[in-house]
Length: 281
Image (tube, rainbow, N blue to C red; front, side, top):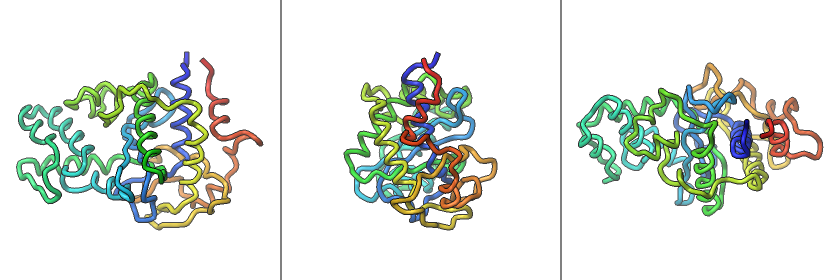
């Protein structure tokens, strides 16, 4: 039986998959403000494709690209995500608890280097480059933070978004990560989950984002169809071959926008179409 939460979570994942999946450091054409969603190979929601394994955002204006770039940097200062991943790697390898605590300690300075952990810094960077992410443009700061909280709470409580037995986060020292299946600590126990009434707004944000400038195949930045263009249809979630900067099915955003194979029925929003197609409880 599929519960209401699981149906809603599937609808959210399906909407997010309308955004291009990206790999590596982001290019300057991406939105300056928004929310990002992390995916890892082998991590799937029950029977329906890749699941989100981290939701992240920023508080200072224009910091989205810098925030994502920090995850691909050479040290963990400034990136809580890197500290979580490194701590899990160290725990899986049987490192001393004292060393793991030192690794996970809060930031000191932007230029900080710790020679004892250089190997793990390299491992975390390599781990980051194995993941994919999607970016959602959200200009208003309060809306970004509210959306982050609601989505983290929804994903962490969804019975179809469980971590695989081999997921690295199962070795994380923080129980919030181990139990939620997300590289998040804040909001995993929050009761403020995304509701079905929030889907229409999420769809608006997805469509607005998909019409902007994106990394095309091979790292070439292109312009979308503009404010009046059609929404971009759903892309393949995990293509077998991915360019360094962007992943897709080999078509430009304009070509994808002209594909009506996944268009909703006349008068029916994409969000409504998704819920209509999902199995009922």
